Image (tube, rainbow, N blue to C red; front, side, top):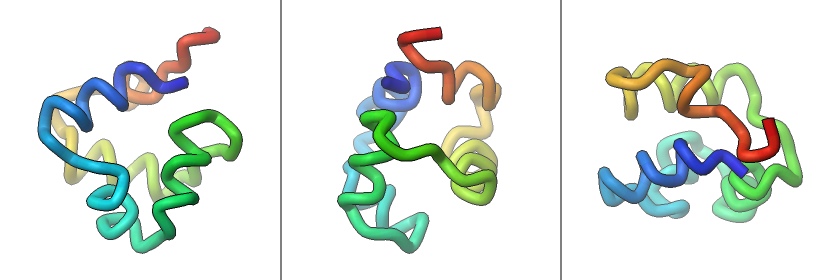
Length: 67
């Protein structure tokens, strides 16, 4: 799930731990969201797009590989 987001995180060297700290959630929560086991919250999607990846459109970043 979320291949574009995973690629963008990797390109910038942002680990799951880094993302969890940024979002103020557990690493397991990030892992669950990246794998599609849980949905992303609006606040999380907004923060990731606005602060970490302003160069990408939200729709592209959070596109799923099953869409």
